[in-house]
Length: 110
Image (tube, rainbow, N blue to C red; front, side):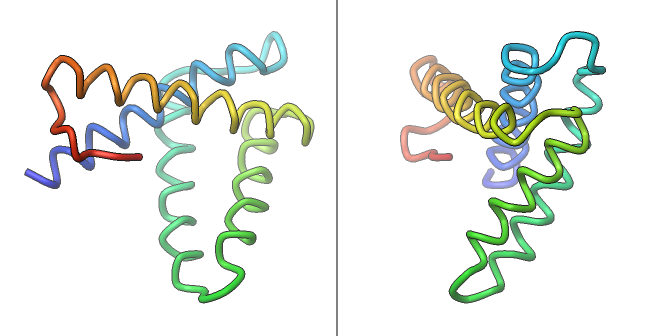
C-alpha cells in the first residue's frame, strides 16, 4: 500500500509543479503535465542522491532544485523560489484534500 501512496504523492507534486509554474512562470513557456512529471522525476532522484550527503545535502538539493526548475522552465532565480513556495502550498492543500475525502490515510505527509 505504501507504493500506491508514494505514486499518488509523486503525481500530486508534479501537478503542483505544473500549477505553480503556470501561476508564476513566464508567458509562452512550455508547461504541460508530461514535462512536470519528468521534472518531478529528476528532482526525486536528486533528492535521493542528496539525501546520502550527511550535513550539506539539503543545501545542495535546494541549489540543484532551483537550477533544474530555472533551466527547464526558463525562469529567473526569484521566480524559481516563488515556484517552490507556491508548489509547496498547492501540494499541501491537495494532500489535505485527499486526506479529507479519505483517499489517503491521515498519517500521510509531504
